[in-house]
Length: 332
Image (cartoon, rainbow, N blue to C red):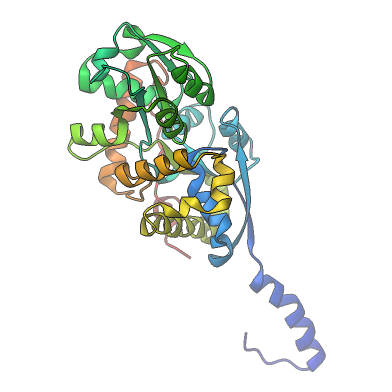
């Protein structure tokens, strides 16, 4: 800062006041689901110091999926790295001014069966016992709509559904109490290892093939609109840090998942499960950053189809998916 100053004392005082402001990093509270693959980019941002690299100071919280979004909505965090657009639609319908601003997770979820299963398609599970963790969850809602579009039936009507938590579903499948489960990573990989299992439906790969290239995201970066307008440079910095985190994942062929800080936060205690997670990541691609107009329009249409069914949402509010450029203007 070049200014004419009348005295060295004044200059020293001015510098003492000005320098901390120039060097100050914005504190940002970010949250993700504990133990979920969706939280891995945030783990990398934290573990590799990408927050400091991009000029903000992250406070990183890994929370149970129960109440996670509510924690964000009431203002306990600024950025949610691990929430789905369905939840955003519900929140906006209830008056919360939040928006998804970027993709995170491709559909790293699906229907898993044990290796002993004779089932070849979801149709083969009609009348059988299937575990899930809530009809209004993003995982079950998305699988339900995908199966309806691809196979023409409603899983909630045709399957004998059993509801427990995501982790408990792995044990139900391993103990033979259900014939299949709906779940997301890393629980999918745990179930595969426990049962020599396989995907009967891999939501991202199978639905993308069915649609000719599009599948919705299971998780997004979600921000409070007032926060990002008050902190535009930081909002862009969070997006930049995410981009670098997923580049590190892809460049390492997901081997970065072996780093102790990620293994610990995912709660992985088995090398076999970790190997399976990495294999599934390389096979299906857990993350992306295509936030094009075309992809967002397709996601909007997907939500509108869910609303037509009326089981979870009745309408699709405006502003569910926005770009930072639209919401807060060009990068400062």
